Amino acid sequence: MEVTIELNKPHEGQRAVLESNARFKVLMCGRRWGKSLISKNISITEALAGRITGYVTPTYHLAKVFFDDIAKIIPSEIAQANKSDLTFKFITGGEIRFFTGERLDNFRGLRLHNVIIDEAAYIPHLQDAWNNAIRPTLTDFQGKALFISTPRGKDFFYNLYLRNSGDWKSFKYTTYDNPFIKVSEIDDAKSSLPVSAFEQEFMANPSENAANPFGIDFIRQNIQTLSNNNPICYGIDLAKSYDYTVILGLDINGAVCSFDRFQSDWSATKAKIRQLKNVPKLIDATGVGDPIVEELQREDYLIEGFKFTSTSKQQLMEGLVTSIQQGNVKYPDGILVDELSIFEYVYTANGVKYSAPSGMHDDCVCALALANKIFMKSQSMGKYTLI
Image (cartoon, rainbow, N blue to C red; front, side, top):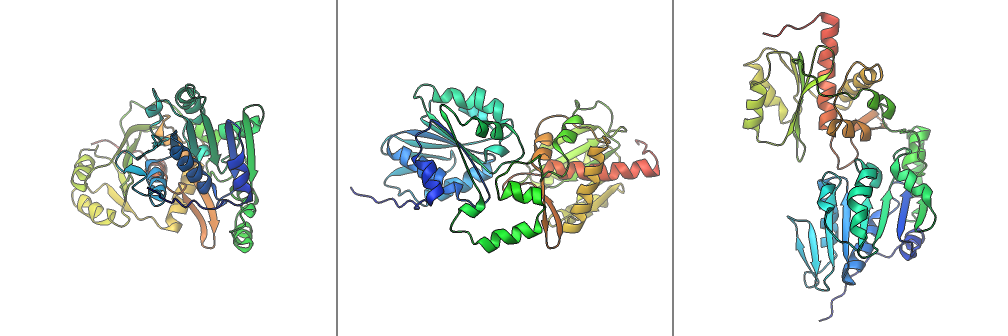
């Protein structure tokens, strides 16, 4: 049986990375440089050679996207694709297994020939994950690893890039280095973005978290354990698509005292909201949330709806920026801090756009921003009394 697999031809920079024999490679590149081609070529060619590759992405959603991309390339005669487990098993004995930064404990006990860590700068707790979960899987076969990402400040990924000696080889390319991207497109982005943001996103020059509106140091200084006090208000972000519903309560000091992040049907979601304390609640009333909020408002006069638009979200997030930088809100470490840390802003023709990077979540950030808005209102109008 003869089966042909067509892989995309790499451009000059991609070829340099692919041809390097370094055991540990770190590729820091600008947006749209073409990192996905490298990841696909390595994982497929290694599997055809009978080797096992672990492919890490920050989220399950991104893992599914890359899984589907590879599934389009590999004929069914060559590999069995399991979409529920996100794995490919090749007739050569090779495998491609997808993992997410949300569940890197799944690496424990495995033996791998290669690991590709895609969007490495966006993997939560990358240093701990590499040292304690991923690196040990490469011991048996003296396996290789490729870290690949657009930079996000001078973090652990950037520290890996600086090693560039011994077993480590670093590569850096800008978006301009991709011959298939029109220069005019990059120049348009340059004219609309702040210099520091463009330098990081397109020129691959790490900055001090240029695109994060809160500031990493400010985010970290407000971390404290979950408060035991009663909530005086709630912010509620309702799930859309593959997102999560987040119900977040603040106490009289502006500290998170109630936090629930879940995926459920609307009936169960409404039941949870009905069980909350009888205090003001600001709920996402955008799209599918509108009729839900209207229904709940007929039962609870303390519920207020908030419709997200580009303008209203900008104002809401700027209020949260002020509260975080002034220390007016406190929150526990974990998923909320992770979302705050990767949250970004970009300048567009219509103003500033605030959101999580593509494929990632900002549900916790939105719930905190909603809770903060109603909390600050309480500070200006007096304290709420629990009924």
